[in-house]
Structures are given as structure tokens and as C-alpha cells.
Length: 187
Image (cartoon, rainbow, N blue to C red; front, side):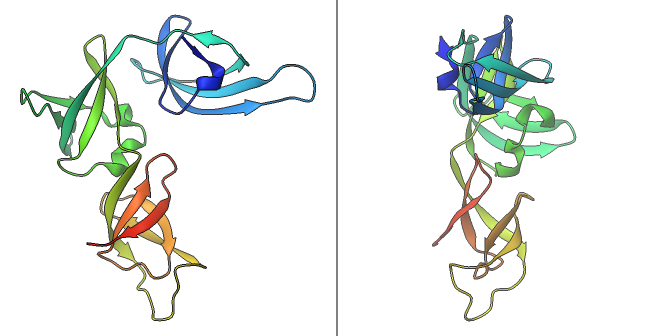
């Protein structure tokens, strides 16, 4: 059982006996009365979104899900392809099943694929990933680490704001929860 105080993005829970994953949540304390938690949930099977408000302290059962570590291979018009490194079994997942994680996937990346009733429903990725800068304005001498930022497009198509000294070809560490630049990685 999990309580509203245990909520975090990606947590799986049963709401009205249906499996959901938390996309976003916000604890809210009105002027009067008990605290509430507003959530955005994604149904694990249908992919539909639901916005629901819960009383603070409400408890939920968790769905019976299984996680398998798999390697991301590639994506094409049939979906995103993953392989079990032990059995070499491959699965394809639709883009909508990956939510925002598709912007962080690189070839041969290890991810945890979540299965519900033996069907792949979503993935979990590491908290940080290293991605190369594919396009940005050039850095100039005198640009410092602190101060302004500029937009950069990374190898996966993800757009982030980076410090002015970042150049094309630099490898950056990105937070996958917030999508923010953390640091430049030395090679």
C-alpha cells in the first residue's frame, strides 16, 4: 500500500481497480480543511490521461507489475525496439507508451521495461543520461559557466538551455526528471 505522501513521478498504483502511473502531482493545502493532492495519471493499458484529486493520507494498492532490464535498439515507423540481453527476445513499443522518455533514448541504453499482465506498458530510465550536443550557437571566448544560457539541440532531438560556453560536440549530463542541463562531461 502507498499513501499520497509516497507519491512520485512514475509510481504505479490502482485507482478504482485500474492500473495507473503518476505523470505529475502537487500537494496542496487550502486555507481551511485537510491537505489534498492533485494528480495527473496515465492509464497503463489504454494510455488515457486522468486528472484526479485525493485527500491527504489516502492509501492505494499497487498493480502487479514486473520489470525486465532491456537494451534499447532503435526506432522506426513500427515503434521503439528493445531487446532482452539474456534471451535476445525483442519487443516494440508505441511512441505514446514511452511518454517523455523517448527524448533520452540512445542506442544500446539499458532501460527497465514495465510489464503489466505480460504486456510492455512503459519504461523507466536512469535519473541522468549523457547526450551529445548536435546543434547550438557557437561559444565565444570570455563566456563563463555562470550567467546566461542559450538553446541547444541534443543528439536525440531534445532541446535544453545550456550555458554560453557549450559547443557542438560537447557531451552533457541531463536530468531525466526535469529535462535540465546538469553539467558538461569530460571525455
